[in-house]
Amino acid sequence: LAMGRNIFMGYLNRENETKEVMTEEHWLRTGDRASLDDKGFFVLTCYPADLIMLFSGEEVEPSRLEDRVRMELGCVGHCLVVGQGRETLALLLSLDTEVDPVSGLPTTQLTAAAQQWFQAARFEVKTVAEVLEAVELGIQHVIQAGIDRTNLEAERASHFITAWQILPHCFSLQTGELGQTGKVNRSLLAEKYAATINRMYTGEDYPEPPRKRSAEKFQLLSHQLSNIVEDDEKSQRES
Image (tube, rainbow, N blue to C red):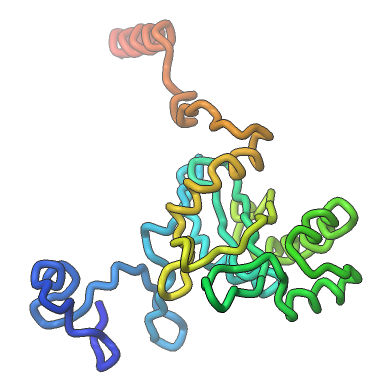
């Protein structure tokens, strides 16, 4: 819950929607998860809907990993950690490009900052296409080095990013890939780049067949159950 002068008072002429997000005491239900830091302050950690559930059942907060990636890779404008239902995490990279002043859509021209970042790594590239062409010529090692540094700060091995892919276009507010606050639209991007995501995991564009949960591996067979029953009855007679 949140309250303050910076919190809105509700939706204009939308009483029902206002009641859904505001309490009777005018507190805003943010829906975020939070933790208490060492100084006694509450820190918003993530929005539950953004959590990634791995195949093991473990929940991973993607936003922290994405922030680390952007810190390590100055050429990246936006990125998306994926891995829902998978055994490991992967990453979609959207390079930092110029925006068309008329349409508001991103171009394929790298920003000056992105070009300088690649120049520091001794690569003269000015467009996304040039970056993609040079991936196999050495850029992959530069990107992987940044991913490796990100993985060094991971809390556990299951949080390692094991695969990544540079996208040919930058995420955009105009296309709905970004929200009004600049956050990535995870559900839309996961659907839009489903083939790319699956290719990172399986090498194929089409989705892999649904897998059974690992817990089913421990399901007892009929003959095992009968043995257990017989052993139990025997122990009761002896007692």
